[in-house]
Image 1 (cartoon, one colour):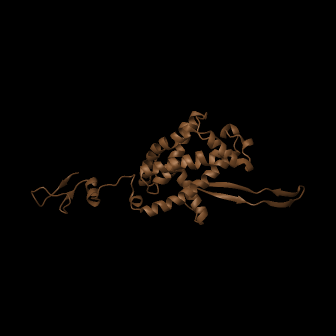
Image 2 (tube, rainbow, N blue to C red; image 1 turned 180 degrees about the horizontal axis):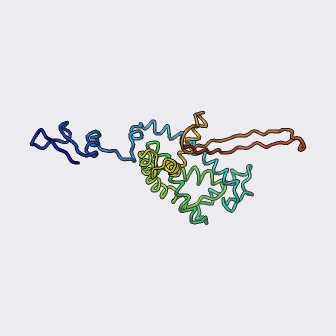
Image 3 (tube, rainbow, N blue to C red; image 1 turned 135 degrees about the horizontal axis):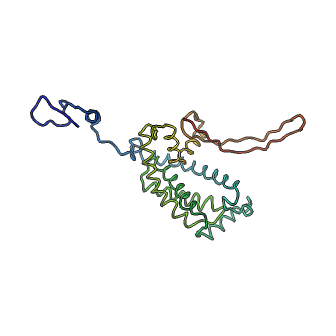
Length: 270
């Protein structure tokens, strides 16, 4: 930074008002004398009390449970070649028995495709990690949360109703997921500090933020649905849609009955 003190032949302390700057960088430094904070520890997160953090985490954990049930429902309706679930054994009246059998038989080394075990599962581990990190928890706490959620909520919880727990998933999901999650968290904060832009594009920036934190985005949508908040916001939004059964008379077709259904509506605003 170029600077000149015309009123003294002595070296001037950088904080003196007599300092004259000849560059934008110098002028910015004088206007912002405090050190720049790490993008990974923004003031709003660092200032939250433990009570606030853990109260918020309870709500996020509830939302992760709802989201996990939705994912299981989606996998159930997909072809068995994708889910690798034997639907003939997933009867409602025997689900409890099936869960106990799968827990007793596992964990085992599964035979899933490489991409599912070493790309898909770490990505979901990173998603759990990001949920905790964005509520103000530190890296170790967030890693522990990723382990608890991926192991006990999903692998040995919901998914155990359909298949035997996997050794790879219990290890790889939270371990590699936490490393990836911390990188995602840093990138997320840098993009937000850049006015949610990537390469000068707000659309690309907001899309990247959704990909970096999919669980957090879905959780925000669940909160809006449960709290009755406004959905007129940028970014990805989601919510459950419930359609009750309907019936009506159509000329030429007679009485027509439409079955009820439950779906997940996703919207993207920018």
